[in-house]
Amino acid sequence: MKRCAVRTAVATIWTDPHSSREIDEPALQYPVHIQDWLSRLTHEQRLDLCTSNRTQTQALFGQEVLKVREENGWAEVHVVDQPTAKSELGYPGWIPINQLEAVPNLIETYPYAFVQAKTATLYHMNHEVGMEISFQTRLPIIESDAAWVVVQTPIGKGKLRKEDIRVVYPNDRLWPDSGEQLVELARTFRGLPYLWAGMSGFGFDCSGFVYQIHRAFDLTIPRDASEQAKQGIEVGSDELQPGDLLYFAYEEGKGRVHHVAMYTGDGRMIHAPNTGKQIEEIPISGIYAKEHCISRRYWSPLNEGGSRHV
Image 1 (tube, helix red, strand yellow):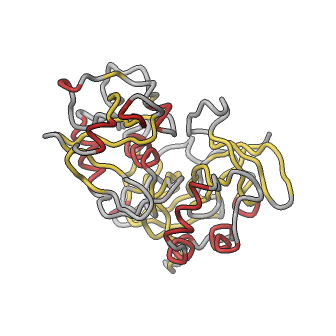
Image 2 (tube, rainbow, N blue to C red; image 1 turned 90 degrees about the horizontal axis):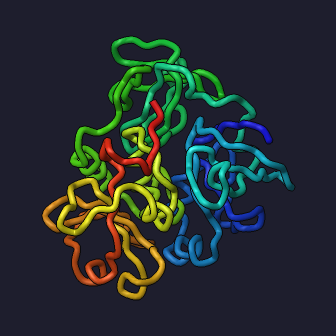
């Protein structure tokens, strides 16, 4: 097994080396053409990512994966910081080898730049525009001035505008003071289109959305909704606070968990609904009221279900 880093803006993790289609070619290239890929997909082709079980999750620029083996230009990997019952090594799947760089984990050193905007431009050292990278991308800082930081990446040095990032130092406390902070951040993504297996500012699925909102506060929760619903602190309906997670199950709440949203207060929630829709904040009513099965809290300092990485 070898530690590698993703060397493109966002890498889609596929179910197997045969999961991709001809239309998916822009997502398989290096450098990746994520916006081009998403703009080409029809509603049916986006839906097929889920119904045909083509994609599993995504990993961001500089993020660590463990490479297990290679096969015909593909690498079997585990995304280290995405917990799952599927593997103790991290979320499993396949990625084109050309999107990986065999380097150590890049964010073990401080300070590091944490992208807070939906997406941000990574510039070349001469200030020419480079790639567009996602929210939650984290890269170690080499030097900085009033307006810029120089970061180390899997493909060399680059520059980020300070207005797009948060600079994180070793003793910085990212843990939220209240769930309202998670809600405030989640609301900045309203209108972003849903993407099955999405984990970036280019598109989220329901569990990827709440996962990344928590990660922004150094709270690592399970990648999938069905596993998130089993951890954290259980919260009764009369105890809900903004930032708590709401889980929904088939058979009017008695079947398998299939969806997650974040409670925003006053009987409302924010979520990434499904293919063809956008992140929205709505009342908890209709089918959601019928299917709500359990609520969990991960942001409380008393919580033992999540982990902290500072």
